[in-house]
Length: 312
Ligand code: BDR
Ligand code: CA
Image (cartoon, rainbow, N blue to C red; front, side, top):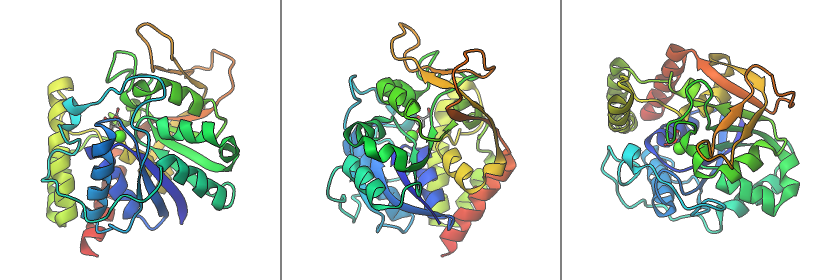
């Protein structure tokens, strides 16, 4: 199985991504590293442990990481995810404690311990932990197999400002360093994730799956509210699960290998992913920028994996 570390700020859609990964034999989740993002770190690290427990995998190591962006004040997204970040299901005190040590050190130690080119990083929150690990231990950069992240936008442009997507906007300096690091990079932009919209029929199928499917249905119901008000769209966008979907079934996705740089200085465009879709900059490609997916294939995959986990 392919070894991955999921770096996360749960988040209902983070929760679905984590569960999909834990339900997939193609992937071995070495640990979850948590970061401040949708809600402060105190909540994201606890939420991650709650998610593992709901998935029946309280044994998965969860580490706490950076509690604020490299240079800026933290911007959160309670307006999307609710006060807890995981609104939609009743929360509880997780049975498993936090794993000892800092998330950044776990990332460094794991990359140094495992054979070069065998560990994939899957960041689905702001990129603070990843950039901090690269700063602290530049030797690990060449050992990363690939980074598959959720962030950015081109055609769909912004969801937190008119120009920027949330994960990149929160820590643009971190994102700029990660995008420039030279690691093979796959980017799940809003262009694809805004097409990964849940349908009523899918939510009801999930609800019938068992306790794990029920939790997912309640989370996506909560998450959908924001998008309905904001975009008038029917359905919740499953941003973060696209990263895991790609790792299992890349054939379900479409994109282009292009140059992407991050705007850190703009007055109105801070955190923008400047994506050279038409190749006009002359800068070399550094990212597989994903913009489309086979929606039915993706949602069928989720049903198949979650029902199997519920039945286990
Ligand atoms: C991203 O921001 C968060 O709100 C979601 O969890 C996702 O990672 C979407 O812009
Ligand atoms: Ca997230």
